[in-house]
Length: 101
Image (cartoon, rainbow, N blue to C red; front, side, top):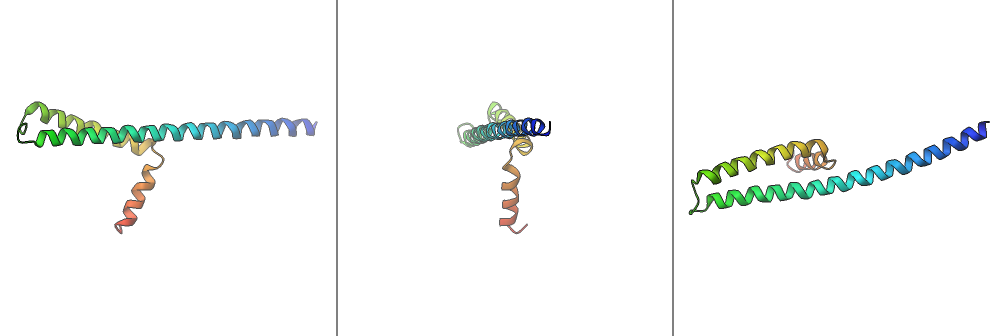
């Protein structure tokens, strides 16, 4: 009886290890994809700001609202990143160590 339970336990443990590895790989893929989206959002926000600061468009209320909205969305994305990106906290800690904080 103990041999049967040991065999079943071994099979269940092998399955669980396989499943956890599969989940970790998927999570890392999602994390990498999110990083790409965050970079694109930051680039877009910077692009809108550059266009807004051009002499030709400076003071345009539509661009000003677009710039303000893109900064708001980028801030929300940064909050999301802080919650779900596994490397975000490590990068933040390394930045503090670099500057002696």
